[in-house]
Image 1 (cartoon, helix red, strand yellow):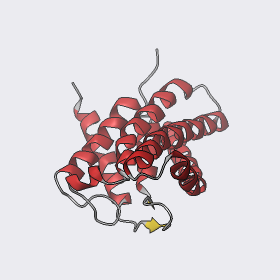
Image 2 (tube, one colour):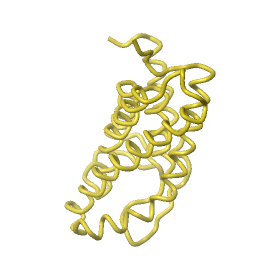
Image 3 (cartoon, rainbow, N blue to C red):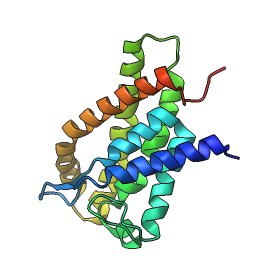
Image 4 (cartoon, rainbow, N blue to C red):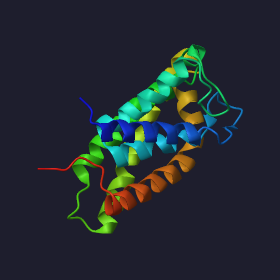
Length: 188
């Protein structure tokens, strides 16, 4: 059972992910995936809320998409999104937030220096928000869009620099929240 606080926090981060969708997507043209700011919200949900609440925040967004609300970047929404070549990235958001949060819960604590906390948050956002997310997105893109794994993988590498910047921003936010209002579950 989730507490009222947990419900409010997950709804808040779902709203943040949706708000990041207001920024227009950037199309690269050579791959049917667009650059959006929403993956930053997924990373932030993981580093700030932890595994369970971060994944639930993403699930809320995906439910809103499924019922047809235009909450994805570019004003997209509806069940057809889940049949598009980019659906693997959307499904991957759940696992990206969960893994980022899981690792954050285990690798970051209050006894660490500010630098160690920030670097740990950065690494967790990189693993969850890039490695895990790309594993889902590239695999789905390769099979559904018929690009083949190599072309989908190489095409997706264009997104790495931006996603590294997003991971850094998520790490800075995670560190700021850790100092001011720690939300990660306390450890025994």
